[in-house]
Amino acid sequence: MKDIKLGFINYTNTVPIYYGLLTGKITFEGKLIKDVPGKLNKLLKSGELHISPVSSIEYARNQKYYYLLNNFCINSKGYVRSVILVSKVPIEELNRKKIGLTPASETSKILLKILLTDYFHFTPLYIELKNTYLTEEKPDAALLIGDDALNFKNPDYPYCFDLGELWREKTSLPVVFALWAIRRDFADKWPEKVHYVEKLLEKSYKLGLSDPEGIVNLSTSMCAKPVCTFEEYYKHLGYRFTEEYQKALLIFYKKASRLGFCKECKKLDFFLLPDLKQ
Image 1 (cartoon, rainbow, N blue to C red):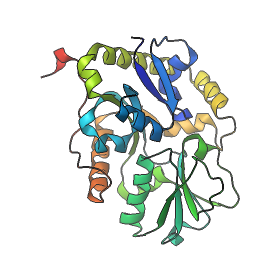
Image 2 (image 1 turned 60 degrees about the vertical axis):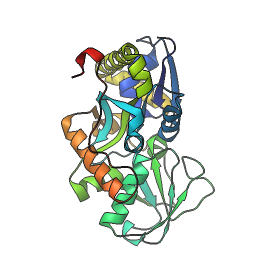
Image 3 (image 1 turned 180 degrees about the vertical axis):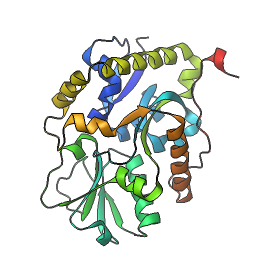
């Protein structure tokens, strides 16, 4: 199992699933590669990773290359705090204004564009930020995710809009931000290795559930001064990829494909061990 390359979103939102692996309480024999979702998308597609959490929109764009693990995703039913649009002006004044987009995310970019196009009927000027946080660019508003969003404090941007909350208000749906995807060529050749990782992540997650204080301590070591407590933050995140979230994701894909942001995706293709396939 030493040749397995497993991705890890290098933000605190993924700590609960990887808690056992990150603390060394559960041994992973392969290589753990840490990066932001946008980079993990590229590494998985190029074959530099075998299994990884990726932006949920990545699956729709490249579904022919991937299976999905059916036990995990990163989701929220409304307010999430780590996917935000910060702004110099109220959201109602953002039409035709300049909005900076973090390179760390793909799903959140599409989420924002669908919201502003379909529900606010805006046509902003989108620009790509050079970094995952605001530096020399001074856009009218900016999309930030993960720990960069949790750490954000800037008096020049007094307005903060939570995309999970906005999506819930406009669609009545939860959001699936990330999925665990597996390269098909790897899974077809080495299904037992995929199953090994599947069981390992499940064990790691259950260990984290039994030690919430440990999760908070580990998260604090990664992101020392968030604008909210981690106890509060994790109340707004979910990780089980239940039928409710699968249906919500397919509706998101439908909205995204209609606007040309991804290919049409009408079904989710989950990994199954060969003896379980029909």
